[in-house]
Image 1 (cartoon, helix red, strand yellow):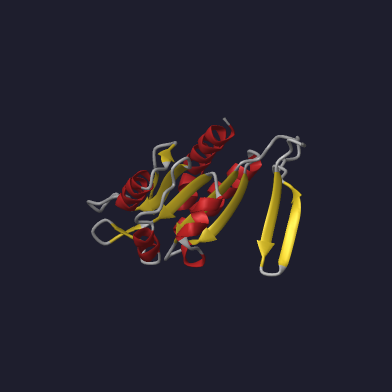
Image 2 (spheres, one colour):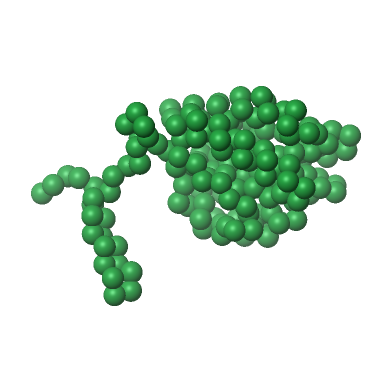
Length: 177
């Protein structure tokens, strides 16, 4: 019998058979699947997520980026690495679009997944970037391994691009390891 990975998928009356092959980058190295999910009201967290995704792609990581409004929590199960991003509002609350997603994560098992969180805030407020801490706690509660400290951006995202790039490169290095 052949030892190659094989898949048989049955979709209604349609069946698909074939070899399972890892996604490979330009240099032939196996690429890791990573997902970046963000919630953004003013566009800052979306801009930050895009910058992180671009940096990770340049580091050879296969990355999908998505607005939290376009995701279901079960989608997280399809990725090896999960990055969640939200700005902080009010008294240390998640961005509005992220709240139901966060609540739906209750009971989800992310055991064996690598994860990290990021977000934007304003240090003039007492609950600076608390949404990042909330996301990290939820990821841990779901069994994910936090692979890097949360990225907390104070103020203008464009002024913090180098900090975001450094963080994204750190994540990419850990994902490849």
